[in-house]
Image (cartoon, rainbow, N blue to C red):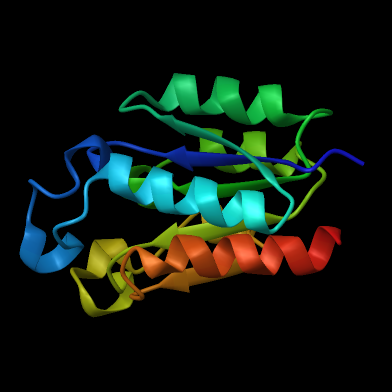
Length: 145
């Protein structure tokens, strides 16, 4: 079985370290990807890091993961709360899906409390900062052996 994991980040996550650091922290997306790539290698996983502000691009990458990746880690950003298209694409993926949110979406505005992606996710990690990505990778490693 493939040990490829897609790490997908949605809109505005390219601005990590710049946008609302009081909520999202000072680490950049490049920092997060670097730490995750090192951890993935230690865990025997092959990480593919991708970010887009465009919903259709994220759908395309989820579809590309079908048949090639063992798992998906996704921080869908604001699309969590709006995108049935992401949910539909994830429902067509057979491996584990880990949903990550840097902030605790349940302590924020009411519209952020619902996530379409959570309906497919095998685990949801929220409010753990960027460490949530590492939790997700460790969980995947335990699932795919």
